[in-house]
Length: 406
Image (cartoon, rainbow, N blue to C red; front, side, top):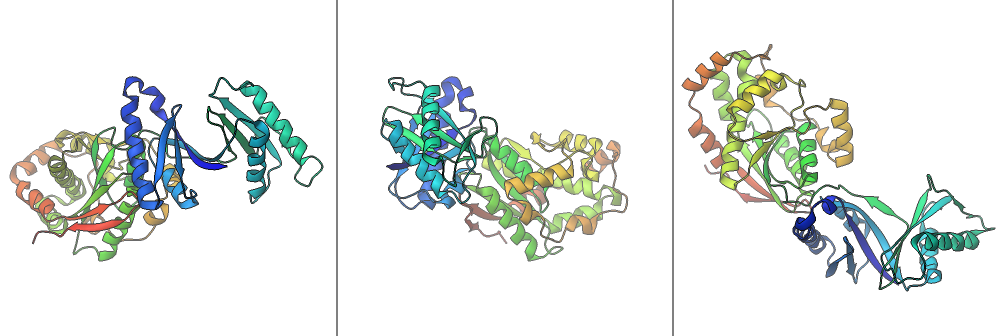
């Protein structure tokens, strides 16, 4: 019996003539993961709009865990292939059921007959397989019942020309579109819950991301940078290779705080972060910025302040969380696997400089006057020049590739 990993794609059936391009992207991502995590040669072929991976080595749980984080993958099934005979296929199904930690009480057989030369229709084959399993377990402590609505386990059959693929476990994956097929973003990361989930959501839409973090040393400690590198490592698992730029921001933050009205500090910090991100985007040829803004959550995210930032930004700013509340975002962080990193305490330089009464409806005339007198262009370029740059692999390995320029 040959074990295979069946990888079901998500939205690629929508893509028409562009479908081969999307399949190439997802296969390249999968091959990269298998090379880094599986250790032996793996073959991936396209079988009737799903991918089938074969290898001389069993597909362990850890590699399966990585595959379900690949954008564009809808679900995976660890299957075994039997000859074109339902009795032989039933032996595999029984062996798989017997290996389960908790034996199910109810089941349902699903079947798709890709091989139209097989002498039974899908529905008939499913009924026959169900009957075989009922007979096998009848009178035992593991007696099964059929439940077509909410079964505890699905016994899935895929009848192909070369055999019948049998599986009893389907794991849902991240879904969406393959990495790199929807453009390149600069993702502005912070140490909280919001921006990592914004990144997760746009990873699912197939966006390549370069991360940027504004490190306000000496106003915050080294543990803040360590936390952000851990977060970048986790988010890197949804990418096929990425980088994070640690931009030294303390001097700029101090300069802004001393140059503007106190109530405008937070908004103008945000303004200059966008300028730095735009400068980085121009260097790496990214097309838009990504933030974790949620409308009204903090003072810099009022409609008026967001409108001001959009007005002065040279690039589009994506805000996928704009209508979410905090509880929804925290719940999503548990799904994405970022929660335990986000919840770790850290110093926040923005809080250190935060005014007692931050502006929520800015005076645009004052902002115009401030911008005409505050020359930030050279300071922005210098900050980006002095960034520490870390490369992040598709399995979350983080490596320093560039020291800051002194």
